[in-house]
Length: 312
Length: 312
View 1 (tube, each protein chain N blue to C red):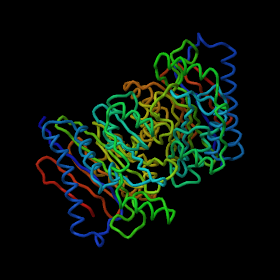
View 2: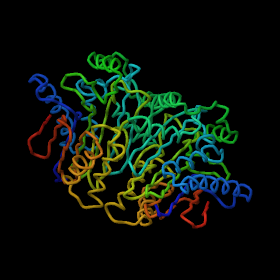
View 3: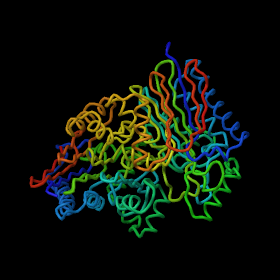
View 4: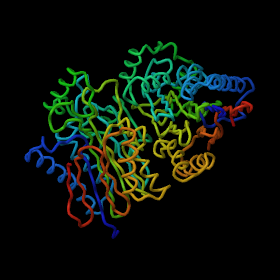
């Protein structure tokens, strides 16, 4: 119970060019990051569980249209918002995940309900939304998810026939950003947990699923090692089973969290061509937030240390 | 090129009671297993690729109504056949997977097309079926997938309100069977590959996704280590990231294929409560087919060795 708590979060990685950022926008992002981390820390400070803290952080980010998750989700080719989310508790190794859900205000809450109230791990599509309805999880109208600049992105992506992981190749600060949000936490009991949520790719077709809802790829937590949430070019993260790889490098090869994170993100993923990053916390409270892109929206807080935020 | 080829396959694990099997049924299963393995071996003997061999084996099993995949897929709660499949090439670490697809005659071929002809790894639902149509992959009518005893299983499952992974708790030989098919292979070039396909759970609801289409959980292949295809209670296999775990135990901890397979299936999974089994081949041609259930339909062939089949 005298263990130091810790929490870290990301709001997506990618090409975030300082030259195209302005102080107002930067402040908006930084404030959002801080607010989310503090929401999670508040739970941990009251001896709350890591799994509750990561859920609260991701929920905050899902409610903020700045990030590609929940309200700010990008549009599919058909003009829909199809969202994915997952959560894992390192204490029990229980997990919940959803993919291709529409109208669910907070997909991370639905993933949590799958974990807590079903024998399943992974539900999809309209069946998952039916489950949300049955559980009384808030649904929203299309209007709630209609964010003008997201729709404009879709129109431009459709015109150029590109499928992009967050934003189409437009000269704005979000160019080539892999929009996903996620959190990892360590509670006073020594439990770690991770959660990830995403609105997917602008103009995506064919019900594409990325790494965010895949336990082992985008999200993983285990009290033996660490908790991980990823953001990036999902296909590479799936093929590399990134989140579990970091846990295995620690458990089986004896690497530190830092060594494992750097090896996976800056060596293995890079060699395969996989752009992105991740946030990680181990059971000692060490936090790593590596990325191999221009930037990654991120923030962390460990024990009494200062709150840290970063973009580039 | 003087390397010995090898191939192994499974047709599901579970409670397969000898007392409830009769010689005719046993012969039907054994013949089907042999036929599938020989289809894969024929490709490998002509210096074909491991990835082509596993696709051919799984395709054979999908076409056989004895197994819960393709034609023999079980029915969902809504009386539909929703299928999942995945494939991975250990040489390139490329992978393809589909979930919740209807009407596709051979989901493993669709997974292969995702791997070969898209930038994606994982497609779902009607979007994946649209992609199948665009690729000219054969679709079938509902009648093709209508297998009377599968529908009877659904009716009984609905009546008892149980969701079962293959068959409902009926006193027949398939009681508590985890119906999935899969194959792993090693070609003369030293490449390994794995493929898995399933019709899911009888009476399943909410678009549940199991481990079969999840790269790292139900399927994994890497020329550094081995190729794996799993069958069992999918939720536990997802939470344990079973297929990649075996690869990591070999790569990072130096375990042999046999040691890694036994540790994961008979120790780790069992402690978590996860029933099932898997087939595995390493780059030396060692084959393992461990399971922690009463039985697993399985067969293998290595080099000049005799073809091996097993049920219990």
